[in-house]
Amino acid sequence: MPQDIIVDHLSKTFRIKDRNGVKEIKAVRSVSFQIEGGSCVAFIGPNGAGKSTTLKMLTSILFPSGGSAEILGMNPWTDRAKLMRRIGAVFGQRSQLWYHLPARRSFDLIAAIYDIPDSKARTWTNELIRRFDLKTLIDKPVRSLSLGERMRCEIVASLIHQPAVLFLDEPTIGLDVEAKGLIRDLLTDQIRQTGTTVLMTSHDTGDIEQLCERVLMINHGRLILDTTVSDMKQNYLTHREITVTYDDGTHRTLQISAAQSVNNALTKLIGHKTIRDLSVSNPPLEDIIRALYKKDKGV
Image (cartoon, rainbow, N blue to C red; front, top):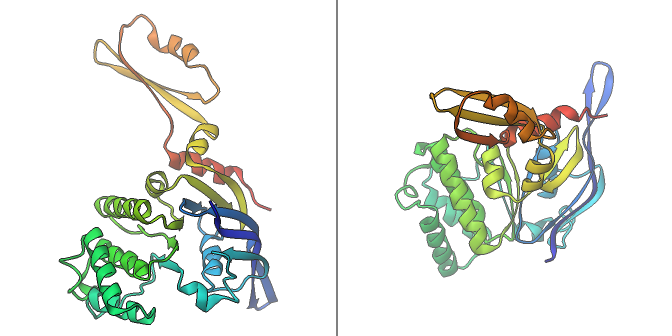
């Protein structure tokens, strides 16, 4: 498969004036990675790590201080007008919908901006409305929609011109559990049906586990990890938990290091009681990610 996104030593330094003169903040430091067409990749890191700055460079909102990038074979900064017709973006805290207009009007305006013929725009927009279950929402003013409803409309708006690459910056931020689950299911189906390449930032491990097969982790502006979600779970475990339930209904849990033998731990748990049930569980992905952040001290 071709590489839809190629990033080579991309860097961004901000220069900020204060009372002591000009201060340099290195937001992104020589980041390199490639993303194959049709894949969904999580781009994660703590607040201030450089995630959003990187996405803003790749979508040509910001110019880099160094390095280069190619999206679908185009330079984001010199081929901006051409590239904008091939990519989509959703920034969780920024809206591309007209606040006082119904979502349908925003969809029509976006189709016109991209010079999509009326019949083609109508057919594809109706298909997206069906896929994202927006039939009862699209004639309501955007201001009257819940956050979850608005985010579904935001994602549809980003897909109207059928982008080959989609950038998602915190697409489920602030949503309740039900709304998050719905958006994840809808995005999973959309990616599967269209083969869209997705690069997504998120602090929510549910987004990562359900949508993505690969993780890029950035911290202090540097890329510190590039691996699959399954390998991250397997190779970066720090501990496991063994829980036994005894015949008398009592239970006991023992935490062991990932390298420690389960058999040795069981001898401590069995004692003189008969075991009714036993389970061995890994820590949540969130704990693994937090440990990796903590381990990386930056420079």
